[in-house]
Image 1 (cartoon, rainbow, N blue to C red):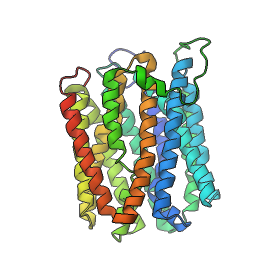
Image 2 (image 1 turned 90 degrees about the vertical axis):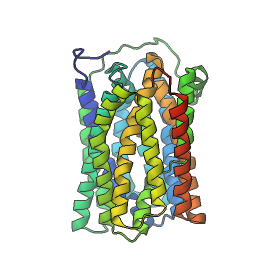
Image 3 (image 1 turned 120 degrees about the vertical axis):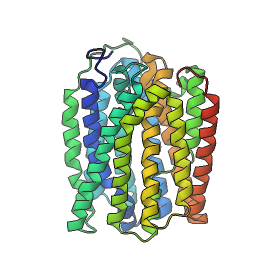
Length: 397
């Protein structure tokens, strides 16, 4: 239920959840652009980086499905949000303390587990604050503030590394501070919903898989297409490595990543409004075509102006797909299953990322980066054509 007047689209809870995501992304994205460089500096190979990122996302995926269903089962959202953001904050200093591969896997996985715990419940809270006609705006606004954190974080990292080049460990400790701030802001969230299933048994860890069988056919068709795309959409770490391999400095890598997130943050809310007006399908399909164009361009990119152009388009792709996909799914599923539906989709998505990132690492090692990017571009274009054709007459699209 929307907490404020009917004319208020961006409600109090939407603002608070968006600010929590902003602070969390300041912490996470402060580290993300330097993560591949840091991992290489402590002995990780390109293949091991791919496995690490994939395994972390798979852990997040399985937990998204389980905790999303658990949130629906007991009718509570806030505890999952608070615990999830807390775990992510704690993981940051651990990455500085534990530098051996097995410990780095543990710390990175803890971060992703926190994301898995909170994602379904948080997105269900956002969905409850909107109507079917305003889902794009609500999810787009949240994504805009979330990604604003992804601008601030790398800027802080860039400023720090200008004064302390190569001193990556301290950044992991500094990143703990905005994480703590995010935890504090979650205390302002108001959850008015009552438990929906009194006395209901807790689901088994993989019980969320059963939702796929009983979900609406349209949900399965949409999710399946997006999951095929996920299998060829590896971690953004590989895009950053492409820039680094072109001979550009750490500062340039971070600068390009900041530029990408500026475009992403600035475009998310307007594209959310556009999706509400023109339909989710048109905006999302356009985003997938942009992805195909970017990855095809990465095959040949070698100079900074080309990288900047491609990352500009990549920011538009992200704004047109990330929040829009969840908004579309929340319009398809039954309201009481919102966290389960989004959790199940993002669970499969994260598991797919395990294969995508690991496969990208091996293909890059065996056949070069060009082959990696070309394959992803081709699959993205095919999925865009399928969604554009198959859902052209669907009411919720």
